[in-house]
Length: 265
Image 1 (tube, helix red, strand yellow):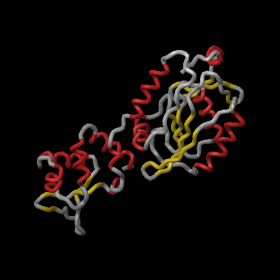
Image 2 (cartoon, rainbow, N blue to C red):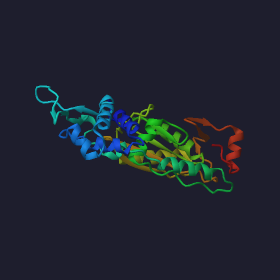
Image 3 (cartoon, rainbow, N blue to C red):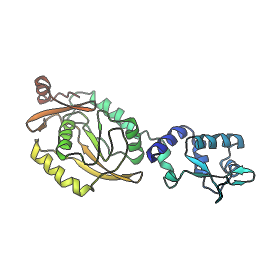
Image 4 (cartoon, one colour):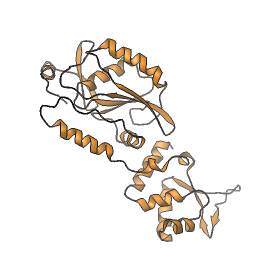
């Protein structure tokens, strides 16, 4: 069982259920179900129901003694958190709406006329990254596994640069959203990538490169700014555009539109 999967299960179980989350917080390998009921203020039967759900989803497990016998106190079972998530902050299991609101606002702005470029996407928080990885790639988010060729990253960046909102590439995340971590630290990726961008993309383009830790793995975020509606970025002399989750060469009509300052995507 992956940590990421357990966190996703927890987020689903605790969504809109703060009292259930409170029960989960109280599970520490020492308290019995009755103690948790008293401290949480939930009826004992409801507490047992919550604990069973958590157990079924493998978030918690009955504590056992050295002989393998389930431990009890006051006649009720003592539970402990699953080893994989024992030290994970509770904040990982809470829902985050900031990125949804910001994306909605960006789309609202995108519908207006005469905009000289939109605000760049914000760097997502740990919880938001978990949401993004769970939901998969889309128009503004791309996953790249560790070891992806620098030129391939550069091509993706050029395509993002020609879109309204720009985008963020998650280096160290598999295509299916599994967080596996980077094979190099930020300084090791920064210079080769910036050189590649400088030498291959025209006109010049500046991107943000951030490093962050998620569930014990280090990943690198490459943030490409939103289009300024003036510059049309070329990769090896060609104009590329990101549409959905793929990169395409712009058609003559699309290229002409971009040069007029009209966005395609």
